[in-house]
Image (spheres, rainbow, N blue to C red):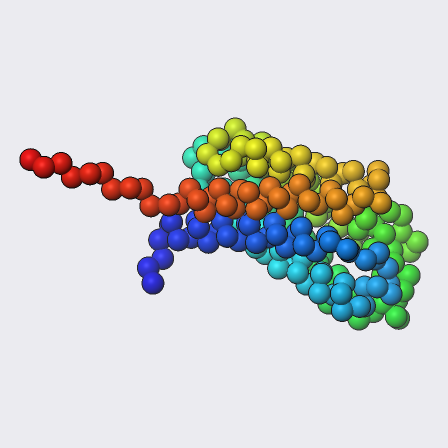
Length: 217
């Protein structure tokens, strides 16, 4: 099998689309999070899938950036670096959520509940140390980077512009989780659909060009 830029870009498109589908899927019937539910198979599976989603999204947005790097300029580079840092940090925090917090939920219930509360823009009842910094870093880079990157994609006008606009709206709307937390799962849907659309647009854009007809001399 020959690895070509087209192959890599198509793979990145698939990765972005899969990340979006996972991001949408894990929100469906998501249980309330606390030190009890985080130990259940349901929540551990969802958090593990969020780890996979973050890794796929990182590969996907890298392909989106490199595919149109000459048109994205400095704004695109800044947005990509921030957005990539957000997903890389998200991979780490979801690792903690999936593999660390369930193992200490019974012995450090207050700590686990406090981490969950801070992750959902709520007040902590105890000290969670550097996890507060990690969660804030993830939120700032994800929202800021996603919005800037989406604006750069929209301006480049290479892939579906409506999907870029939806990505900007979706990442920015995440701020609303702290305002109306009862609808927190709904705020993830626009970003999920945007990743699916942008991934498909990148994949579709890699179709081999039709060879020009050969004219008889």
